[in-house]
Length: 382
Ligand code: GDP
Ligand code: MN
Image (cartoon, rainbow, N blue to C red; front, side, top):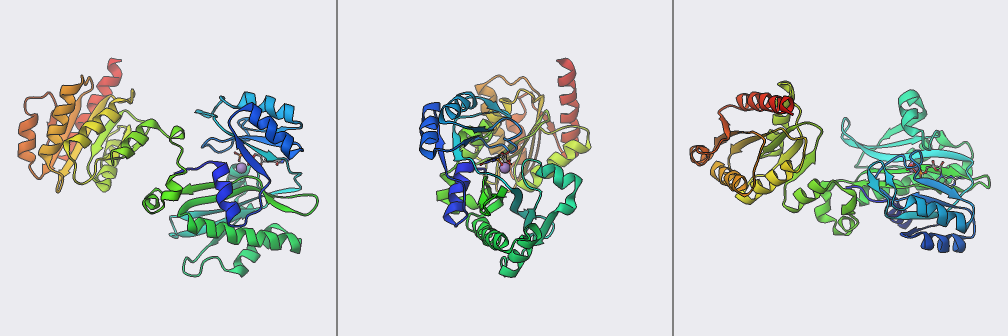
């Protein structure tokens, strides 16, 4: 789950990270008032769940409260990489002497948190990572020991030769790791972490991504969710306890179990198709879950064919078949559907579907081959 910069700032500030002063606003008038209160040039920053706002016109410096109001009236309501800006953060504009990148991510290879820092922070950090990876210093953290102070010190001296600034950065790195742990984050980032000509060290941006699997034990963090920033179909799926992720292809997939869902998507690709989604209807799928799954998939105009791949264990094939029949009776479905039912009550399931126009297959590869061919026809028919 993503949260907004202003929310991430609040969490990090509570852990002790120094930030430029900032406040959220939803109207240009509020922005002007905040500008007057801060009494200095301010930065107006779009609060949307996308990275690289600076380059996309979502971060603007204003020299006066009037200009801030003007900037905000253009920014509020604008479309930034597909999302509409509804809030802006107004922060006091800091003089920058140097910009660094500080971050912690979960590294899949080492299965540990990895802290990354770079003296080449700012809006070009992705380019730095690509072109000059040697400018990014990495430390794999042993979760048992945590980030030890000598390690944090070592990393900050890679960024700063000035001892006083390095000491401040050391503290921030430790606070950042604390935030990473305490939020069950999958990523925490400060970019840029700046020094000023006066020798201060301040964070100007904050990003925290939360591990979705931890949210059930973190209602306080779940409360920070901004549904308007998320893919509507994914929000709807989550409400019904379905795991759904939209993808780019044209074959809708309804599968029970995450492992089978991934294997199904692999097979779709192997036979030359492209999945339109990942969808796991879960273990005990009642007919309602199936109808919801169909609704969600059919909202996607790209979908040219649908594949059901059900391995009945706790899931009963007749439940799935009933759900499917019900959704077909509720609405006209124009795209072809292929189903493979195996396991608990598969015979019953097939009987229920016998009268429908659903294409049935016995093996997984047969089902996938069929659906790939049907999706192909559907595309050509357009
Ligand atoms: P992002 O592009 O979404 O990562 O947004 P940031 O908050 O990181 O802002 C982008 C860039 O704007 C930063 O890298 C800075 O160079 C610049 N910026 C942001 N805040 C300030 C500020 O207070 N003072 C100055 N001088 N520049 C700022
Ligand atoms: Mn940034």
